[in-house]
Image: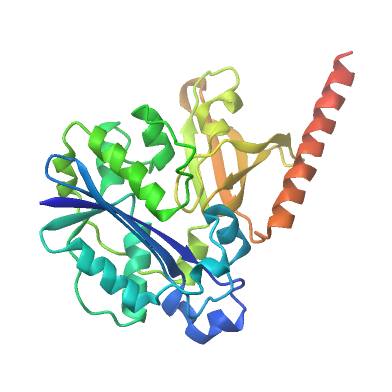
Length: 318
């Protein structure tokens, strides 16, 4: 049996008030624009690859964030096949005696929504979640680790000619992680089930609150839970884009940027716990505005606030 490691890239509406989105509603939240895959044989040797761009038919204009992180240009998609043809090419390439692996459930969910919307009925081989196997290996099944974190864990270096957020390159890196797993065949214990994608569900998932016991740590704001907070949508951890600023409410707030989901705020408060210990209440929330110019301006403003606050502290210390 072969293993097919799959990764996708997709476009999204420029606005959920746009005519393009309103014409399809929640039936097509994301439209696929690239399929990338790596084939490994039973000995985990890479034997083939698949790379197919897809011409969008509904969200024709590329969202600025998608264009920025993927490097895909509209001209790249102009002569590409549309979804049904691309899906059939991929299906034929996969063959029958194989298992498809993805990193997390996002790809299979977006794939299934596109299959349903474009009425592609031919079933694909069974799909499995490599991210869940990795979580079990590192004894962290609650937080969904990012692909980059897994690469760092296995000491897999990123390659200059294989930039991230390209479906084929990300599939290649995922395949390298798969090869490093002590018992890679255990991935078959984690079958994938597509979740239904709707705009309302995405909105509900744009905020995540955690209560973390910090005990008597001197400065928990310097710890991992504060310095690399998770994206509230995908759970992948990211370093702060702009550090913590003390707010009038008593909370400490900072900014992060997820390459997939954009700018999110991090708010931290502390409360008393049993035994004289403390709990850190961390809330991560995706911002409503994700325009690149807004994000850059917001981060710059936040950095200026932080600099002014630090300057005031230094002045008081004197």
